[in-house]
Length: 321
Image 1 (tube, rainbow, N blue to C red):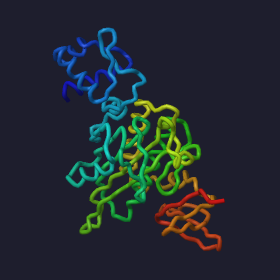
Image 2 (cartoon, helix red, strand yellow; image 1 turned 90 degrees about the horizontal axis):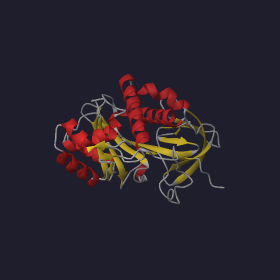
Image 3 (cartoon, rainbow, N blue to C red; image 1 turned 120 degrees about the horizontal axis):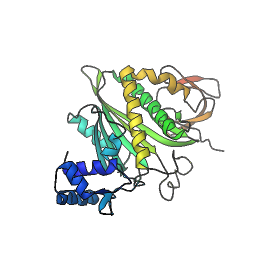
Image 4 (cartoon, rainbow, N blue to C red; image 1 turned 135 degrees about the horizontal axis):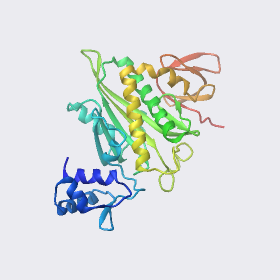
């Protein structure tokens, strides 16, 4: 690591407490001037570092993520974590890296996305410091028809992480949305590349966006009745714990097989028993969701009694009056 990274690590590990420049210099075996330059470089990158009583301090309530605070909860060399202040889309960035041979379990995290994406080409609001915007690169030995189970495992891992850190029940809206208190708090987008010769997945990029707290002024009007957040306040510590718990849980499903998440995925479904609309080719088709089968297909019954099992698609519970 560079002197700058080492200084940030020391300050993060003492978050809320002042550490003198001399103490940092001694610990790192560098000059106080080198520490001073490192602190100024960190400030230029956006880190909130104050001078206090002859030392430096990152305020306890400072909300910027940093690698040291994430690694405090995820000290595992398996993960190649890359942290950015702002990107267009973590999925877009990681897909490009995957095409260039980036290794499995590379994780891109951003403080904000300027062009965050969801399923079916929808945008995903990604304001600064109020959410988690991360993508994970996998190279699993699975066939294309098993890609769905990657999203299933990610959804369950996110739901568990939310419950562990907030105590709130997290439910899953088929296919890939997480709901808390009746509002969407997370979307998942899995994008895969396939090897047509071997009929296996070349790589999969799993993007996760979690609304940790509401942005200043709340969400835009078209989202305010749909989107919610898991906490009243977003802190760097909470976001770091959520990221770590998600990755550890997701990794466990990878090791056991993504299908091992299916039973819990089915038990967390919030659509079952509800009237829904299936959005298909510009048409809205009313039906009732009656279950999710062992292959994670949504089982619906139409008003005329017909039954269907949906493999993919967009469904809504917001029916017109």
